[in-house]
Image 1 (tube, helix red, strand yellow):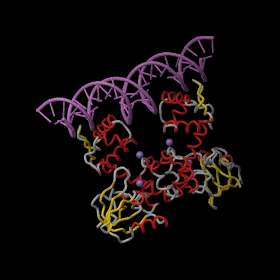
Image 2: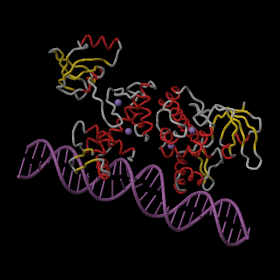
Image 3: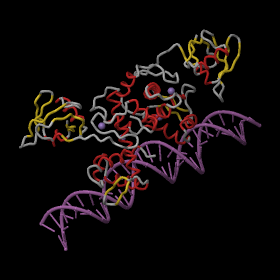
Image 4: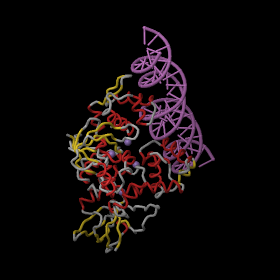
Length: 217
Length: 217
DNA sequence: TTCATTATTTAGACAAATCTAAAAATTTAT
DNA sequence: ATAAATTTTTAGATTTGTCTAAATAATGAA
Ligand SMILES: [Mn+2]
Ligand SMILES: [Mn+2]
Ligand SMILES: [Mn+2]
Ligand SMILES: [Mn+2]
């Protein structure tokens, strides 16, 4: 059994290792809002518990055991987010902090029953995949909106940036999950994207487009 | 804001002070599964935070601030129990440990929405009252027979278990709706209840007593 | 390659919550 | 009232997770 703190480290390492592997001490320190020295201490401890492979000065990777633990925390986090939005009418930008706490509740029965109660959702309110109880993710294929070309059509199925300011911005633009979009033009000089949403033309910056995930169809 | 640990202490002190006031160090130690020395340390800390009135060697009482904090934790604990039983099909004997963790999640929005989602329940799955957000308990006219104390009198007004075996058992004992009862004693070692029904003394198990609802009068 | 900069680790300290063992206060029994 | 038993507190140590400051390793530039 891991402590609340160890679980947070494992989850962060899991997320960071999708970007660069092995994961470096400072990257963890920044994400977890702590000092590099504290991270080093924790990496040694996680290494002793065989949850990570840690090589001094080189960085850290998750072991199989560490990875499945991390995925389980991600599963719990996302299921709770679905619960908050679908059942308790939270907005998608209000759920993160609470889920950050709820993900640490220890009870397999609880999480299995919650999954069932929510009807085995495959994605969370931000479009992120929810692993099943064996740690497997469904393979839905997303593309970043910023990668699409004129005349491409698709549906918004996720976001890759979860800050409340970003989510509220999307809401204001009407770019919420499930909306169908069509690319009109990608502007040369700033990479901004002109698109059509519900017969409405709009222009969004490349920065925003990068964080919107589209299922083409 | 209090730590997880401080919250557990406050809740235990709250419950124990219904039995004896002030609450003694050893009583807390026993309930919280810790050593008396640890309790003393924590009482000093809670006293510094003005959550309890602590007098060396005399014991401890909750301040107003401490009491309302404790009641809020009790509220959260019981609401989560209702959620687990009503929505996730937990049995009433499976909920306690999970609620013991869930009660510490910090989010007023969460608990207000949960309350609403559950339709503002007044009692938890064990028949214990759920305080509202202002800390007020409803005064329901009925109580579980197992919650009564010696010399309490009342009338049987309902049951909370409807299986035919249980109802036949009550019939055989003469414990039917409308009968007046009086508690003689609640036995320490098994929680069974000695009571008087129509000048007749009898002893019923705690399990049976829990499912009989009484209107005190 | 040598020096400067940046990243990481070590050393030593601290706060929270706990423990054991010993001391002190309180209660109970003689 | 005095001694014995019990309860509670203190003293000092331990574990977990954190920190600052100093040392060391790795990287990048001249
Ligand atoms: Mn977390
Ligand atoms: Mn999410
Ligand atoms: Mn608890
Ligand atoms: Mn209960």
